[in-house]
Amino acid sequence: MAKSTTARSRFKMQRALGLELPGLGKPGALDRRPYGPGVHGNKRKKISDYAIRLKEKQKIVYHYGLREGQLVRFVKAAKKVKDRAWVETLIINLERRLVNSIFRLNFAPSMPAASQMVSHGQVLVNGKKVTRSSMVLEKGDVITLSEKGYKNQSYLRSQESPRMSAVPACWNVEGTEKKTATLAQYPLPEDIPFEFTPQLVIEHYWKVK
Image (cartoon, rainbow, N blue to C red; front, side, top):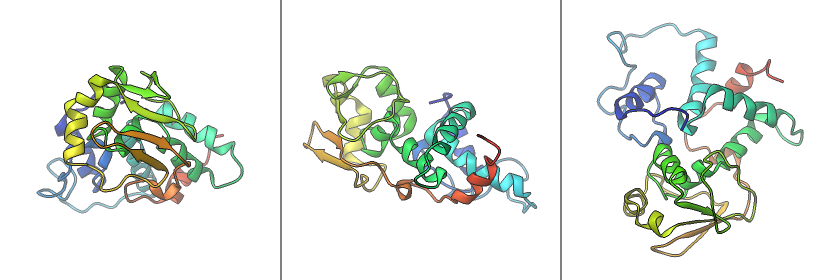
């Protein structure tokens, strides 16, 4: 993750956006206080067009655990691909990041937990230990865990009570206790697991080249 965040700050992020982001691993953020944090959080405010676009971008930053500079680099790379709308390429590439894949496979209950598993050397790609969460996977790549990874409480809890209701169709998953996952196809733009308006992100980054 770009920065370590406390459970409290993860709740605040979601309340500020008015939306639960699965990657933060803190469901129920809006159950008791379905409004923004702070003394004036429950008062209606006029929101500028810029603020609306910014909030849409922040969904991506918070859910995927990115720094602004990282996201801009992904945007620039996506704009070089001409066979589809660049924002679709952006989402496909973010969904292919190793840390996101661990989370979407329900190998970890949140992006921070997935990042920790990777940094601790508990994730293998094609049989080789990988410690770089930002690695972007290709079709045919196979994810397994080390013996320590399969015993990790994050993995065990996620298997018992998955954060995500379904694994994206691009993955072939085999095994029961010790699962193996193969990226059979690239993810689809609609695999993004939260409410999202692509046009607002396009408008926010229209100057980036």
